[in-house]
Image 1 (tube, rainbow, N blue to C red):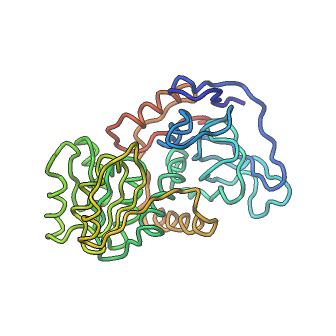
Image 2 (image 1 turned 90 degrees about the vertical axis):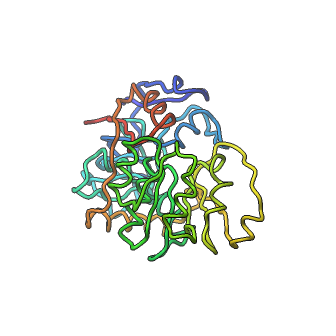
Length: 322
């Protein structure tokens, strides 16, 4: 089978397609024939060995994908060959024609979604659900600011939060991205280019500030985030690429909290809960991942450049067995 193999940490050029043996599902494993793989910023950190990630070399990147079950190993029940599924995590990596998963990484893919949309559910929507509800404690009647709302996780936050009676504001880096954010449930979207965006967010809330901020780039925004939190506000850090200096007094003045999100910390029951959020949204029509671009396996490097460069206007996928 064809698979992307990383033999050394580095830039997008280290993503090389090779012919490798098709994996065989041992006990407790499921073999997936992948039609599409999702591309996420964390994949680039794994590829480069950055941000605290250092997977054992060589490896195949990719945590998300959608396809059909090809085979199951001994001890696996409740899964059958031919089932349409999406994966949220993988044992062998999803930038390949086939991958192995554990049962806790495989979820039914509703027929309302196509392969590309299914490949965008895992990391973005599970992370969004964890940030909003497990860590952030968002509840109906509250307000949420999502930085980078036109990216995969940001759009997932909008689609999960807005139907639950939560007022959602977003930021984006392009007019196309701003339009996409508004289309997906945001009450308002503010431009990254506007130096007055933080005060504009506060004014949009009527003065008290936002209850929760989902932060994709804490090293740039966190200091300003703390100044627009309502009393008892929370900041959930999903992404950061460096250090930042803040004043703890900003936390004291509103009795706010800053916390981090790391999806591998989620329990199996929490992951199943996130899958239920997705299923409910798909059935109601509120969950539909926007796909910005599709690339071949051989173009995985270009896909990584697209994901990391921005501005974003949806998800990026690899088309494998179309």
